[in-house]
Amino acid sequence: MTNRISHWIDGRLVSGTSGRLAPVFNPALGVQTADVELASVTDVNTAIASAVAAAREWRSASLSRRAAVLFAFRELLHARTDELAKIVTAEHGKVLSDAVGEISRGLENVEFATGVPNLLKGGYSEQAATGVDVYSIRQPLGVVAGITPFNFPVMVPLWMGANAIATGNAFVLKPSEKDPSAALFLAQMWQDAGLPDGVFTVVQGDKEAVDTLLTHPDVAAVSFVGSTPIARYIYETGTSHGKRVQALGGAKNHMVVLPDADVDMAADAAVSAAYGAAGERCMAISVAVAVGDVGDALVDAIAARLPKLTIGNGADPDTDMGPLITAEHRDKVAGYIAAGAESGATVVVDGRQADLPSDGFFLGTTLLDHVSTDMSVYTDEIFGPVLSVVRAGTYDEALAIINANSYANGTAIFTRDGGAARQFQFDVEVGMIGINVPIPVPVAYYSFGGWKDSLFGDSHMYGPEGINFYTRGKVVTSRWPDPATSTVDLGFPRTR
Image 1 (cartoon, helix red, strand yellow):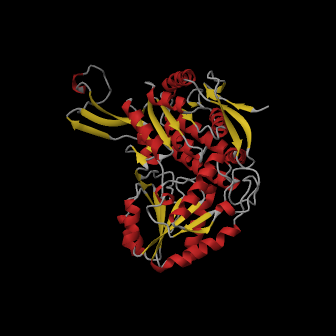
Image 2: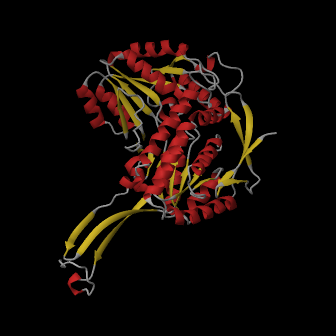
Image 3: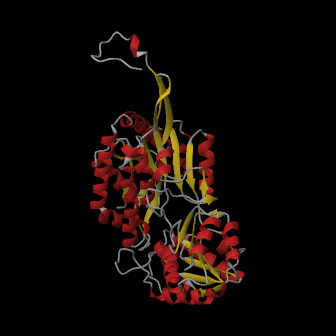
């Protein structure tokens, strides 16, 4: 009998009312393992009502109590990492080491949020005018929602939820219906850590649930990570209903390799960044821009490494790359490889011809050379194990290629020249920069986000900008009666 995955509302598992289900697969085996309930408008309204009631109480909790819950959650997340990683691998397909790494990066955000007593400090100005003091405070918004993607079912919810909860909000999570079980595991851990029921809620669902969150008057803010078309929709719909929205969209991350670069280092970085998690990362490198005469050596070095990668079930510790999330997505990525070849790209390594497991949604690693910027393999976000190499004659040409691209999430440069690296970080129009680092995801005490079509809204995610996003400022100007006119005996002389 197929397992049924339901919602988490008011501290318990709750069956939905819609009667609609979606299949959940183990992508390494190609078999359905569960059905996930898809929420109705009624289900979402019930969840929000519970969150509203919980938010009223939670915002009054002391900072020390909130921090204590975050610390307890941090310890549970650390202790249960292996168990949670197996859940991620079973439904997403990424190898266990990637799943553990994802949880570790989420854990960093929880650790950042434990500092909420310091993060919410305001300012104070005594005697701004005679007898007048002015000070600032930040207060929670109320109920906030997170709509998260399939590729990081633990890390991205923690990017959002840790800061949202620490700052006194109730958080409603709508995870991807493709790998929904990790969200329920997080919900149970939040409860075990002492978080009051209703402060963390999970609503499983699809567009019906999303639209209800975006339009519900009791949801004050929405955070989203996903593709650019959906990010634009989330932003426009949410803001038109008076909500704060941070919506992170797609990516086409470039890695510039200058002629003086360590080719072996650059090739190792390209393989890890392009093919890790089967390329299903918003920070994956999908374009290597080879400058000058480094191109042939770089392509040869990358191609030589690909046969050494083991592709298979992510639960096997010897596996380097797992499957794609669905059969449909695998076939879509394979279609891009065919389109690239038809457009004139050189297929150096063809993932469609790889020796792959007979079951599951597998596709091998693909390396395309001599890709031009008008090909679909360059213009589109492929989200799979495909690396395109674009040749550039000079640094200026490479820079122009990146700056002309509509995506601006992350980029990297590989060089031994410190001056060139510094010039690149100054010149390039991208939100996150790596210097000899292929995937420049900021640590938790900075903030994550791109530019251009990779971000809608003006707030990056987690870190200091996350704290500001989930709170609003209030400035208090106070004057008390002249103490000289008071009749209360203080036992000492009064002064102004």
